[in-house]
Amino acid sequence: MKQVVASAIQFNITVGNIEQNLEKGCAALRRVADGGAQLAVLPEMWSCGYDYRNLKSLAERTPQVLTRWQEVCADHRLVSVGSLPELCDGAIYNTAYVLDGGEIVASYRKLHMFSTMGEDRFLTAGDAALVVETSVGRLGVAICYDLRFPELFRKLALQGAEMICIPAEWPKPRQEHWKTLLRARAIENQLFIVAANCCRVQGKLDFFGLSQLISPLGHVLASAEEEDTELIATFDFAEMEAYRQQICILKDRRHDIYGTP
Image (tube, rainbow, N blue to C red; front, side, top):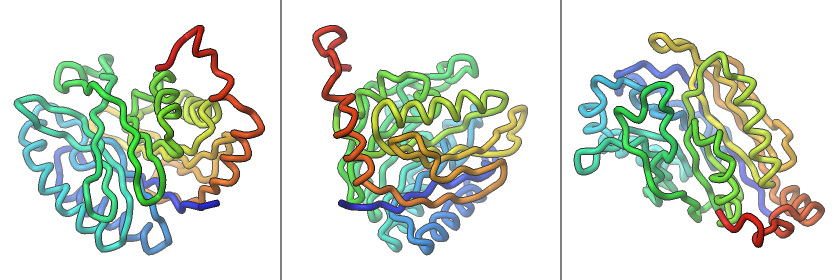
């Protein structure tokens, strides 16, 4: 049974400063790859943060960010996930890209807009969930606020996800929600979670970090605090398969009562 060395990259995003964030992100990717990581997840909107007033011009530079990101992943044979602003037909999406060895193999547009912070006024919601086959296994992707919608995670599990990658910008004071929901999503769907949050102060918001790597049994394999850091842990797929055979959650679902997400 295979094992995957996974990493969550956590850093303080400098709002609007693509070059600085790109240097931080790429340097961290190189470090975790040198440490043996095969899969690395970056935070939400990691190139620029939520700089709403300049979002269009920042999104126009996303192709350049992708090129640099692809080069690092190609050099290190790394699978990586993280979200960036995507400009398409005049709309701006919060889009998570899945890179495998330098190739963009899939992308996912955030489904749920956090209206409390005005995301729905500046960004367009996606319209499809994503599970993609990569060299490290089948990845599902969710972004930040998506975590509060368990039906999305169940859909990803039913579509065969073995790991779910969650780029995030989740601020204080809701850190207990973050920790609890991450473990719940892992346990109830019997899969691995890689959650990469940003940290420290951006404008009026204070981000707590607490990036996590979690097993299907809800064990926290690695957890960050509130500073820039990189987490690494090994995912043992034999543990996941044994748990799924012991407690048959996906098999025992009542499709006749509530259908398939």
